[in-house]
Image (cartoon, rainbow, N blue to C red; front, top):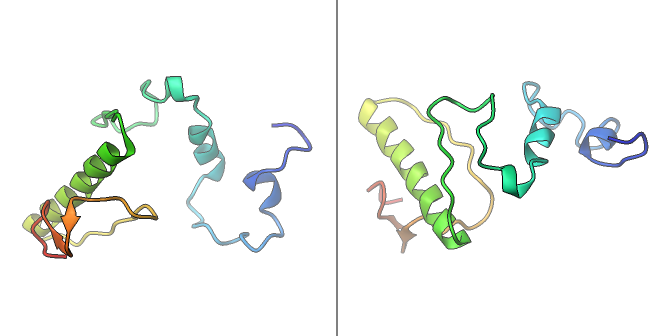
Length: 110
């Protein structure tokens, strides 16, 4: 990063976003993750969970379905185990396999 480069890391101090992000977030590490070139994005990284496997999709619609299915399955597994669940969801419409207000993936009806 050059001395005069402007990005989140160099402009956060003194801005309205200072103190906005949770203290435990390593924004520099997040920035590094986001800087991976697309052709290298699926190469295993040292910080990945051992069970994590990247899944490539051809279209954003396919991604939406995969993401929705994973969220639904996390909800179902949590409910079946009697555990509370906290989700940090992406922003925006995702086309999550839910139609007419009824979820077809997890059976929650929501």
